[in-house]
Image (cartoon, rainbow, N blue to C red; front, side, top):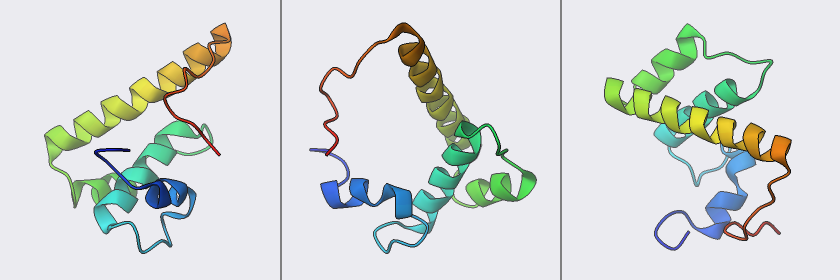
Length: 91
C-alpha cells in the first residue's frame, strides 16, 4: 500500500462498481478478475471486450496470468494450511 492504493480504496474494492474511487479501467479489471475467480462465473465475450477497451493484448494476458497465479496460490495455501505471513493485515 505504501506505493499503491490507499487504505480507503482497498477497503472499497468490494464496492468498486459503485465507488467513485475507481476508474473504468479498474472496474473492468476487477470484474474480469472476479469472473475468473468465482466458479459460477465466466469471462464472456462482453466482459473480454470491456477489458480490451482499456488494456492491450499483452496487458490482458498479464492480468489473466496475475489473477490465475493468485487463484492458484489461494487454493494451494488453503489446502496445505499455510497461514498469512502478516504482509496484509485485514481489519
